[in-house]
Length: 322
Image 1 (tube, rainbow, N blue to C red):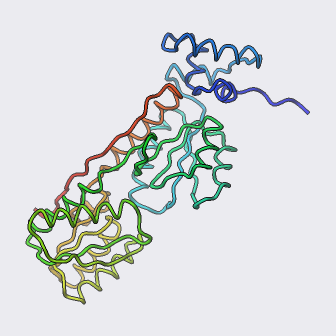
Image 2: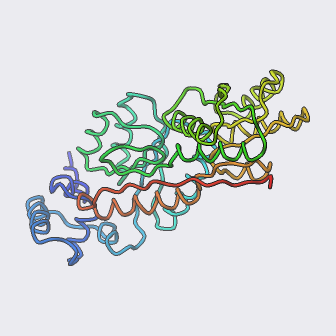
Image 3: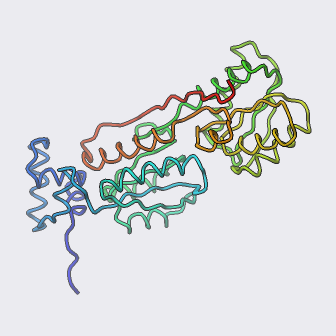
């Protein structure tokens, strides 16, 4: 049987550095410390490794025939799709392929699929990996970045959901709503709890002492429409904060169909909100997608030499009903 050819990933893993670091050593870059350079060169010599043209391009910012993975729990979320769209175009401009992986909790098979795909790095959306999953990725020297999820001592990009909830409370009160409710996502999430907490605290700070009504919806416009009809029928509330734009768009449809005066605000800042003139607390999906792609490229190039990267995104109000 023909022996397996040594790759740049093998060298990086054995030397305990990033693929980008190996590339810089191969290109004699001055940005690599003497100690790290020696360690990498020792492994290259021991493995009798001959670099490929692709490997040497990485450190020079040329197009690279490589791939990155995107691991997410829901492929149908409009907000995530707008982020993916930006990420895809950013990577394709660099000649980097994007592979989508659908996550199921505590399923080691998806991590094995990621390893088999030999991706250079991974984005993990809206949830945290367990220790076994992290260990598998680190064992193969695959750098990963959390997006839309805060994780201590890990590379991550996340939105300040709490302050977004406060913004939503101010919006509804300023629109004259005095009886407020919230539509939660099912199943519940960390971001959901943070948005609701900010909403309630924001109301209290502004002197609103009444209880906040509570409804639930799966992530779908159709379900948002059904819940919107229920709120209108209950006739207890005149303002609603929705967990996300997707649910809120369904509520808006119910409001307009029934001629209701119910005030509605969503969360995410998706394109759909603009088309239906839904006021929303925007996370800036395009900005997050660009930032995520640039951050992952940085991790690929710097490898273990990269300092901890965390970006806290401040949300902002987009009011289509001024």
